[in-house]
Length: 398
Image (cartoon, rainbow, N blue to C red; front, side, top):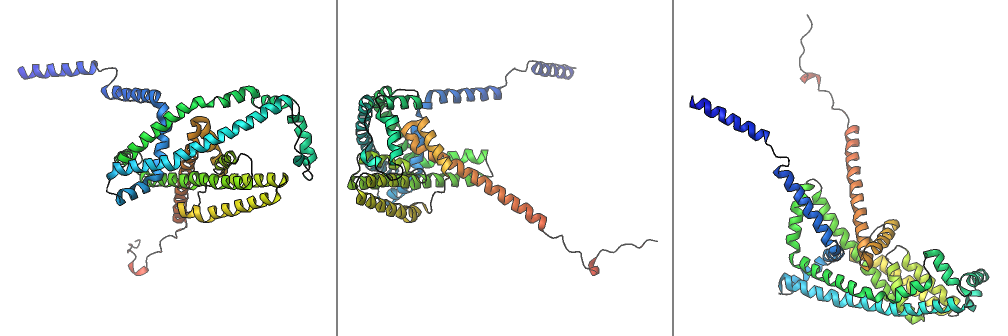
């Protein structure tokens, strides 16, 4: 009797539990809480995404050098990371900032000339009008769009929707962004030191999560991503900076006006396939047309030899072959990176596009392998029939 009552009581309790099932289970609440925390983290810390991403790219590219320093010097991982950080600041960050500041000073002279020409007008240069075949046409266009007072302002307003005064004031007061850039640089250096010190532990945790999410492809992806980042940074960014320095020196020797600004522009253009040769040809043509043909010829020969040596010897040695990134992804990476991340995006954008192109090529390679295996299976001949001596005996029909 007591057993019957206890069974009835337990059945009633089970029915009550099933009837009072909560609207949100513990697992569902934990998932929503996790999503809420992730969304809040993205909202509050999205400003740190650019320096952290830049630090991650630099850490990937310079990791072999960090390991070499750690093996060569008895200073440990933290000491090697701090030493490498000082080397990056001394040999990369400070020279780039000094070049940009000097180029900004030269750019102010260009802006002053544009403002003065916009106010008073200016005739076309004599050497420009004496160019064969195209000189008279260029002189006519100069008088129409530049020579008359207010012509530059009208052209700028037609193209950008703003007048030249607004643009010049914005450029001249761009120094107010220096604090933001310095703060971003500081956060990037701090994040870079953390990656140097704890990079292996972070990579091990990422590998554990990645192997759970993509168990079949994570091993291949984890090899493609670091190699692509290292090749892109070394084969595009560092070599482009070197070309800007070398060709900027050539501009100064040849007597080009504003050689630092032109060197910076050449370095930026060298990130795009064909950009550096275009700058060399344009500068050489300017020197030849302005009355210095031998200087133009010397600059052209210097640039041709330098670009040939870089593309055929230095770049393959540094990255094990040229970075075969198409023109359109490179251009979109540069423009999109600058638009969204500022000057840091100049280096981050092409790396992200290189990763995207590498992932796409890896996917295409997997598809090619799968299609080849399917075609091989279809073309495989059917098995030959067994010899008659070992065929299974069949009973004759009665």
